Image (cartoon, rainbow, N blue to C red):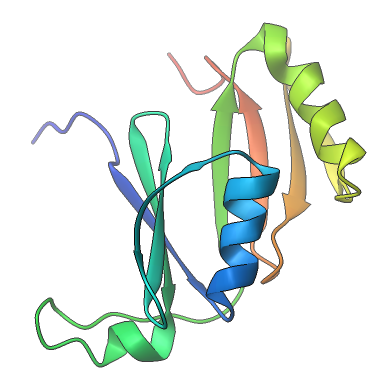
Length: 130
């Protein structure tokens, strides 16, 4: 079975206004959908980041219910040339970088948290290519 990629990634959050501020105003992701009290969706390159209030999506009648809890992890990709700039921009916003990791072969990534404690990572394009 062959797929083109992962189109959507979902996080469950506590406060949609805080989430929107972080992902739209801080990280610059375009808001592409929003339902007060339920969700806010963002475009990230060719992918979509879905941020739901877990209790609201768990009660869904239109689509299959889903929910989750705990600190999740996802990574955003940038070019090798832009990596240092992304790291500097995150730091300049007062967002703490927890760790930078050397994956070898010239590839690095760094980790930070969103307001709900989800672990976010910025990776260099090509890191996982064969």
